[in-house]
Image (cartoon, rainbow, N blue to C red):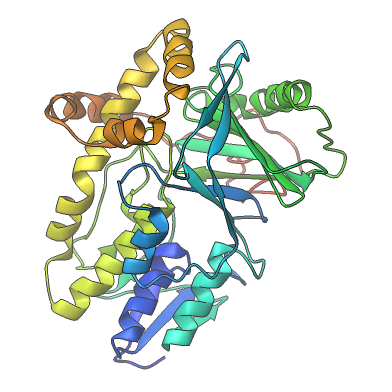
Length: 381
């Protein structure tokens, strides 16, 4: 490695966007990824690039970072929501609510596209190499620091039209939501849990049963399990005493209310790189850019968890019908004085949740998402 090259630890969206930003400015940069390929945590499962937290379209926002949308994506204007009693409500918006993308090492995935863009810009990306030391001004983009949210599910072929479904139910997804996404003959079904993480197996089984009943023609006979954890409910950290810069999930940048983090990852990676190029204070810039929304997310999560389920059902059914749903969601995610006042209490209450292990697992061939064995098996990302 060139001794004068910028070093980036981790080849996820944050690290690759940081590397591409530096390389396009003519700076030598090396990305080290300890896994053998890009997108190692994912298995071709679908995720949503949310398109409601800002008035501008998310693809335009990524373009402003230098990210070209040469990955596969599918805009979704319609989602069927279900409340805790599995009553459906169809939501339709004029502008996309989100863009579905594929994660993993497939050629059309978001991860593979960002790898191509970083290399085309001139960055060196090396796989199978662990970063032993990283000095001041190095960028740490190595993923979540702890596990306080779990997503577990299946990917499988589906002879169904493109569609999106989400269930808000404390039985199927404690503190979170379950979802089914179908695109171009492939499907992802999962539960995303923010509480009671040791119940993930039972919650996933209940989620499968619910969607099998709700969506005619759903066939999981060729399903492949996947799973993963995230550190969604922790405090943000942008630098450390060694002068290293943290971006993406390593910085704690995921929405505390629903866990969306891909856009945060890419924006923080670009900002970290820009601060190196301009010799500016990354931590100060990141706090100004990300902290208000992060605090608002904690306040929103505290309110959501405090709502009685029947009231949450009524609000879901009422809001999903609104023709201005996307605009209302933009306002919901935005900071305001009330959320600023509530945020410290929410952060103290929610931030106390320790990383959770699945202590119920005693299998020699571990397939737990997060288990007492200290490793992740076939069902894990």
